[in-house]
Amino acid sequence: MGRPPREDRAAVRDSVLTLRLADVDRAALDALIEARRAELAPEGVDVTAASVVRWLLRAEAQRRGLLSDQGGKVARRAPRAPAKAQRLK
Image 1 (cartoon, rainbow, N blue to C red):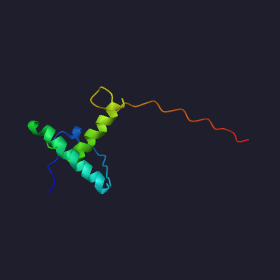
Image 2 (image 1 turned 45 degrees about the vertical axis):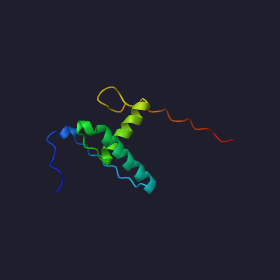
Image 3 (image 1 turned 180 degrees about the horizontal axis):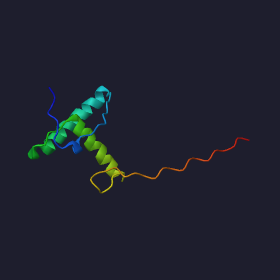
Image 4 (image 1 turned 30 degrees about the horizontal axis):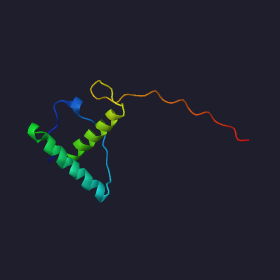
């Protein structure tokens, strides 16, 4: 049995990411999960591998200036102009 469906369907996303991790990467992820769990324990937040991956992704996107100030949405950059083809001589 899975968890019951959320009543607020706007919070549900339909993109699924599957990762294959080397043992060293999984150990690092587990350590990050425990560290994040300790940080958020006073607030009673449930920390999962998925929540840590989302947290890391958002933190890096924000650090690089890729997140807008509107609800954490990723800022879209204008597409680059295609490179001009060069003739071979």
